Amino acid sequence: MTVVPNIIANEVTDIDGWSACPARSGKSAITVLGGYLGQLMIVFNALAKEYSHLDKATNLKSPRESREQGIKKLSTPV
Amino acid sequence: MEAGRKLINATTIQNFIYTYIGEKLKTETLPLLVDHRFEDFLLSLSTPLALNQMRTMKEPNYSNFRKIISKHLGNPVLQLIRDNQEDLGLDPEIFKLVYEGFWDLYTFKPAINLSSKKLQTWINKIVLQVT
Image (cartoon, rainbow over all chains, first blue to last red; front, side, top):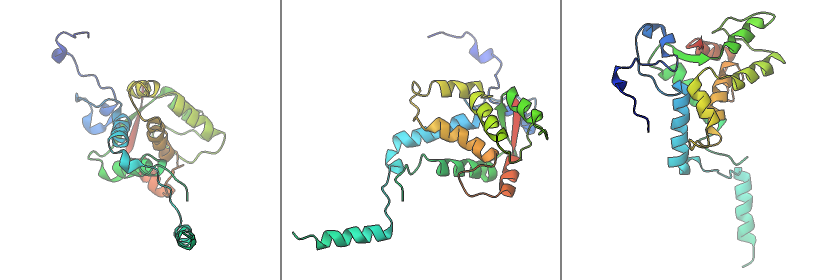
């Protein structure tokens, strides 16, 4: 690991264009990696990985298909 | 009906991007970086467009414009994310769905049902800046 001396004394680098916002013009800001889109990717990635049950593929059938399948099952001799 | 991912799909992601920027954003505008080739292309059109202006484009202009957007990212960190998706442990579909999904909305080709008028209002909230 490389230690950066006096990191706190360094200027904050605007990496995602936050200063383009007129209200922030000329002001320093600590911004987020990858800007809005980068953060969104990280959020959706966390959702996909940590809450995979919410993202599971579902084999959706139309109500008619489901009904027909149910009738077929019932009419199959045991 | 088709089987598919319930969360990580174009509809959900574009709907989130549209709603967040259009309605939930705490600042008036959202700044975003684009490559200089983005602006160069807009200016080279037979009816030129200035940066931060957009209209529906016809082929082959539309495809050429999207190629520039996909190839030349204005944000260096986004570029790093794109080039190192696997090492970063990113779901293989996320980058494309978020990045291209945003530009689908911006170029009037959304995966969700939105009028051009609504999209134009939405586009006006985004401030593009050339790197």
